Length: 348
Image 1: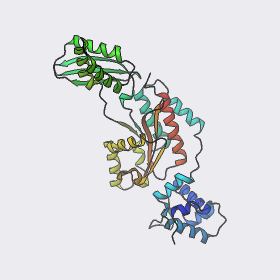
Image 2 (image 1 turned 60 degrees about the horizontal axis):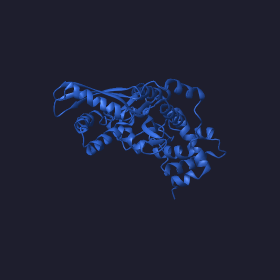
Image 3 (image 1 turned 135 degrees about the vertical axis):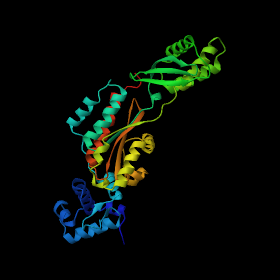
Image 4 (image 1 turned 180 degrees about the horizontal axis):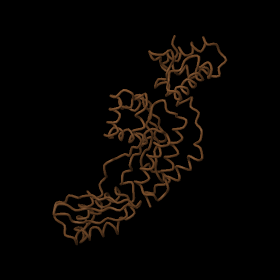
């Protein structure tokens, strides 16, 4: 009777053989034969016993035999068992921690930090680095100014506490004269500086419902302008290092490579995946079809949320082949998330 993956995971010899096979495949990218395993697994057993264990691993769906080779390669299920119960993680070397801290310095500005984080992840893993951009409503608002463009449009200039500036065009139902715009901006700046955008919108609507005075007209104008000017922005993410995947044997098929790069360009499905990971605590490892995205078949995604003061602001991670060095990538992603969170200061 074939043994299940759960049975295999309880067998010390099978665990050691699978760990050695995956380590060799990650290093060399080639199918691993029984003779190689006999030399490197450190098991005092006969070649026939190794072949029997390999057959059990294959029956359990943890390894597979390519048609062109007598050796075996890990399956996605094999990698999952490896990551969950066989992987031995080591702390990130101090020089790499120092590099993360030096290239993600506090006060560098949010966009610069996010760009540096994605570039660093790519450079330090040789794969694709990705960082989701925090929604601006997570950041404290410092100042707003309104500039009339024409009778139907007003330019809102928002300055956030982290120093970032956004320009947003507001469509208005009536023309506002410069004095009205200045008065509305002064009201918003004096009453709401230092608060997140979502809290400001909710408070404005509440105040308008309660207003029974000469402030009602000012509040109505402020709400009309703020509804669009302070609305949530579109989600986005930064990617770096896509070209590093071009030489991978896992992506030798041009159709697969094209589908993957289309997913990178379109971003929507990747953003939805990152949004799901942001709602779950801690580091996540998706292997192959676990992502739910067909273009990532044969690839793995390692993600970790980053944030500040207990608030998750976004997610960063690495996309690479399933035969990536998880013992190096996982601590690097965790350390990068911590360094980015420390460098950001949305509530300043």
